[in-house]
Image (tube, rainbow, N blue to C red; front, side):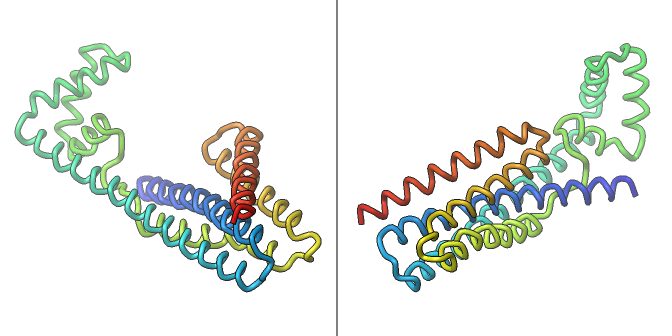
Length: 227
């Protein structure tokens, strides 16, 4: 039960990570296109079409990227497990030596480390132990590429809706201010969530996202002015 619970938590954290990144990219991708287009034209249909195109493209791109990334990680881990299984079959002495050295490096006496290695390698957890020692992950706890992809897909689409709605439905005289405010609040929120997940400085993460958002809007606005 504990292993299943740990696996579920790891999958949930990975999906949440993908969701936060997808949301942030959705916000910046859509607002970038919106500012370029809206700076060049005031036609609402043109702005809507450009914004929706950017939203769909970003969501699909993020989903595909997450699926490919997590799939590569999953395949790499499976290869590492297969290689470790062969090592245990073909060179158990070397595996024993490495396990003893691992525990000695952890501060265990050589005599005790040998006893631990003997016991672990004789158990049905030998493969799991060596996979963890050599590669740093738990046996059979592979992340789901589909969960990461869908999380990124929906979060990118959701993130992109905020600047698009602000640009389309705000009063004409407040369109730019409302959109800027929507973007600042949105990216600050994604910065806060990502900082909590990574146990990093929340203020720094929020400020970094806000600065990036403002720079993104400024660049695309002036690009639109040149059109």
